[in-house]
Amino acid sequence: IYADPPWQYSNTQPDYHSVQDDHYPTMPLGEVCTLPVPDLALDNAVLFLWATSPILEDAFKVIHAWGFQYKASFVWDKVRHNMGHYNSVRHEFLLVAVRGSCPPDTLKLFDSVQAVERGDHSAKPEVFRTIIDTLYPLGPRIELFARRRVEGWEAFGNELP
Image (cartoon, rainbow, N blue to C red; front, top):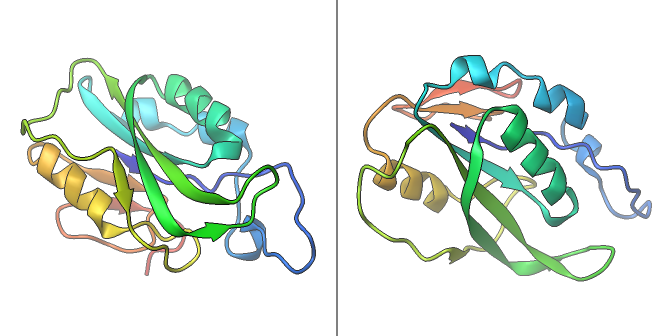
């Protein structure tokens, strides 16, 4: 399961800086937590969940609500800086969590930090899907909150064509 929820942030930004709601509808944490992901996931499954620093604690609530246990993370170094409240943010986390027993099918280790210059708002680099497909070439795959269809993946999202 690959998920990039439309996180709802509780902070405000100056008028000259866009916020998530300017780009897509967001969801409160409670709604994300109550999505039927536990019914969707196999008994042995892996979750790759995108999270930013301000909502990192919320991401762990989602992991637990969906019935998964945190195992590791990747860091996406966006190369260029973004505006932040406490520092100049240039990274996001891809949290890895499992349900049951779901070690990788392929014993290949990838660098936990991937430096890929950011593109469109909220778009994630394709290298992370390649990592997932390499580690887990077997079994069904689904992307939640998808914006496009990818061969070999089921996709659910309100921005799908």
